[in-house]
Amino acid sequence: MTHPNVTVVRIPRNSSPLHQRAHELATQALRDLPPRTRIPLQDGPRIAAYAVKGVDTPAPAYAVSFWMNGEIQVVSGTVEPQETRALTSHLLKAKAQEGVPAGFKVIEAGYAVLRNNQASWGVTGRELAQLRSAAAAGLSNF
Image (tube, rainbow, N blue to C red; front, side, top):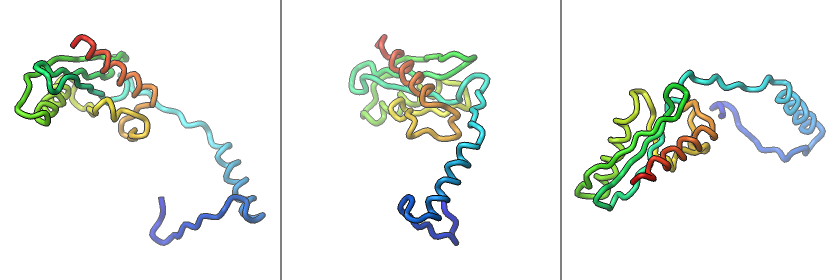
């Protein structure tokens, strides 16, 4: 992050004795910070991951996974195919959203990865992997 009145100049590491000393001080300051702790939510992160299957088939299916009471819950089902693939995909997402409690952020399982993680999700990479796996497993019956 930069301030409008600040210019950032990249200096090669240890290009001067002063830069080397600044690097050592910054490294030591980072080491002296207390470890970051994640405050767990009582029922887990308020995020849900959904997966779909068979969008072009007679029985398109969805599965959505989310935490409730400390455990991953999975809701799954099928929808009637719509006039277009896009409409069918939209209906699958809408049904997945209906399956989770209010206030949960519903994202496609493929996007439930750490690089897309947002602070508001309150979730770790491991938890995202668990949600993706649970959603995929929910599709195995279809």
